[in-house]
Image 1 (cartoon, one colour):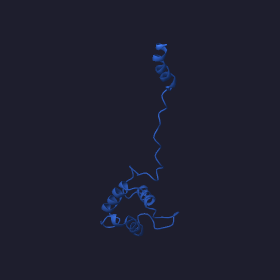
Image 2 (spheres, helix red, strand yellow):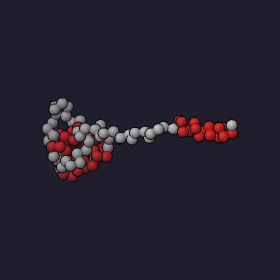
Image 3 (tube, one colour):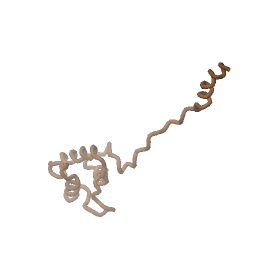
Image 4 (cartoon, helix red, strand yellow):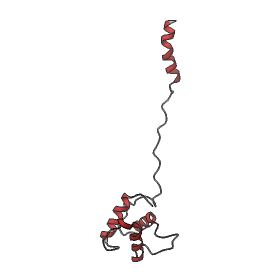
Length: 108
């Protein structure tokens, strides 16, 4: 009887343990490319302008200023508010500052 009582916890442990390990969970897939940073897009390229536009919602269903125009650059500057770069609008320095800022801030 003592042997039975001594082995009872071990028997319960074996009976209650899972027979196989749980399946590995994969991380969720990243969102579509339009919402992600264009790692290979060159500053000032159409892909870069599209990414900035998508992040800041400058155009609405194709309505709005042409991407890269002075009006569009002003809209980007306005959307960035106090964080907006102080370089001349549309300059390579301004594009680089906008890019760096949008890569570090959450999407709007």
